[in-house]
Image (cartoon, rainbow, N blue to C red; front, top):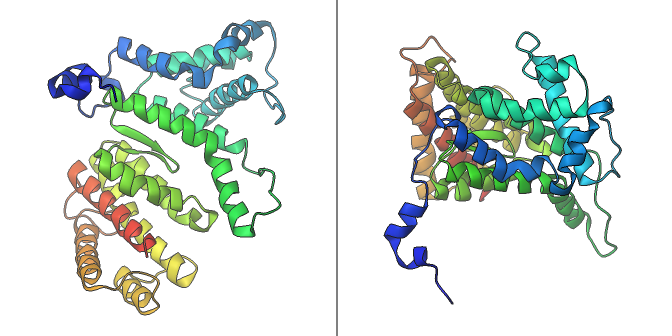
Length: 336
């Protein structure tokens, strides 16, 4: 097989890659943000439809398209709905000001682009989160055609994949571009999470969050969402909140797995009960890991979380460690 120069010469690969490390969105230059936009632009606007989208300026928005419209219309719908929701949710800031003043398609599109280029990290990640959510609503209540030979389990599994299909494609492209530019966030089925080592993302975060996308784990996802949101605040209060929610998510996971609902049972009791029932691993290695995990959770909950009056605030290192530990804990249970 013919090899690229970068596959032969390691130094060349390092030079060709950005080598920027993990950075905040706000650390990117205006030119870098523009380049990120150009690499992702076709996800927001169909290339052949771009001029047509912006020619809608003399038409008022009627953005509730039916499901049989083409992909260009669906993308435009997501843009308009995202701008509209952002204004509605944050009225005093009015981030999509042009659309607020002139509710037309090109106003929403230009606001979306302007937000992407000039707004702060929190606003950019918020509108990308909204866009992602509106991708998911398109197939929320639908399902693919069923094959005659499919079992119920096979059809349910394929339906779940179908509902996430477009989002997963968008997330994969966005994450690849973000990685190239060193942006320190990673889009998952549960929202933006702090980017980790590639091996951690691929072997722990992705399969765990994919498993948790089933409605059975809705409460766990809600708590994890709060953990990720707190982490992105980049404040001592946010990091302490991340610790609290990460530990609570692990407990909620075991509560649903073992008791069928969330409740007040503590982690140590749940671990013992789950192992007795054969619902989670019970080998010597796992027993040691779970015991240590429970001890670490108990210490961090007491010292840095919001569950009790804090002895000290959590740091980014604390928060990331507990978040990763919670994800590893759930992933190890899932492997059972």
